[in-house]
Amino acid sequence: MTLARCTSIVVACFLSTPAVAEVAWPDFRGPTGQGIVASTDAPVTWSESENVAWKADIPGKGWSTPVVVGDEIWLTTAFEVKADEAELKRRAQGSSIGNSLALAKSLSLVAYCYDRHTGEQLAEVKLFDIDNPDPIHSLNSYASPSPVAEPGFIYCNFGCYGTACIDTKTHQVVWTKTFKIEHYVGPGSSPVLVGDNLILTCDGADKQFVVAVNKSDGEVAWKQDRPPIRATNPDMRKSYCTPLVATIGGREQVVIPGAQWVVSYDAATGDELWRVDHGSGFSLVSRPVTDGKKIFFCTGYGDNRLVCVDATGSGEVTGSHTLWASKSQVPNQPSLLLHDGKLFMVNDSGIAQCVDASTGDTLWKQRLGGSFSASPFMVGGEVYFTSREGVTTVVPANGRNEIIRRNELDARLMATPIVLGDQILIRSESHLYSIE
Image 1: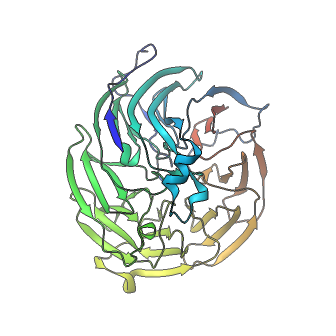
Image 2: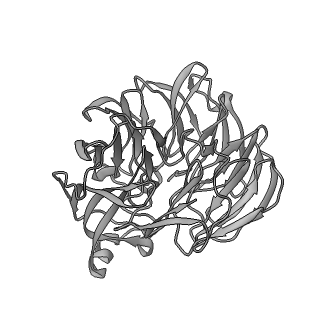
């Protein structure tokens, strides 16, 4: 596999942009990092023919959630030159999920910028060209990790294919960096920003580590290997979880579940604060949530459970700080949502439930229909679950077991929607919708 760093190509006019623009949506779970949105003006109903202010084409393929800086929407995508079936069969030989894999002969990894109010495409920034990439799972894309934003800059991550920083004023690439690991089924973990550092989770099948790079130049600030893993099968050592950043017990923690372990790191130094052995789960995708003292996370494939951990400990605290665990049709891909002592979730096959966060007891459970990858979000006292089939089911956040309404688009949806005041942005397989 080869990777060539490309000169930034910007195709579009440069609009006047404030030197420091407000970041309205910094990562795939919004300003709180946990899917809770303060807005009460967001539209409540929509369809292909109702409340769609604009609908913009998205070239290429990618499941990343966009980020928003000022009046600019940024997202990543991948242009694939398809490999032939014979090459896919050869590359997938020996894989236990060979029939579920897809393969590109080559890739061009790109960031696009759109005007928030009109949907006009403002810029195309080519970031990486890749020859002979590895196969990915057919449910994944080569541009699944979501970018992260701060005033003036966007950070785009494509896993082992590279990470890049873009200046939002000039639309130029500031730096690129690459950390090589074997994803097995493609990249998935999104980066997070903490202070001066961009933190990347590199949980490969071959090696597992967390690395912080300086956001100004991409140079390594700290790097920490993950704890030893019992499993010897490389497939059971990989993971794809996006870190949760939270201040708990007076410590700024970066909490990252992975195969076998959930580990908390000191945000500034990378020193390990605590770890919990959660069992034999692997390929974790769902991002954890916190109530300010406890961490709630799902343990992934193989042994999928919902676990609650007291995050105030130090060292190996499996026995002392694991408060409860529940195995009741919990998600593999969608993240959790925590509100007022209740955990809301939907698993990949469409079973939604509300769980008491203090005990793990199920308060209600029902089948929504469809399949799910996007994470739920809460607006104005209501919880939204968005299916791959384009249906958004809305339930009350007060714990009542009822469906308030369903909104449907004629689109395949994998990315988590964005809420910006009276506007909802939804990325589908081929379009970006503005619901107003």
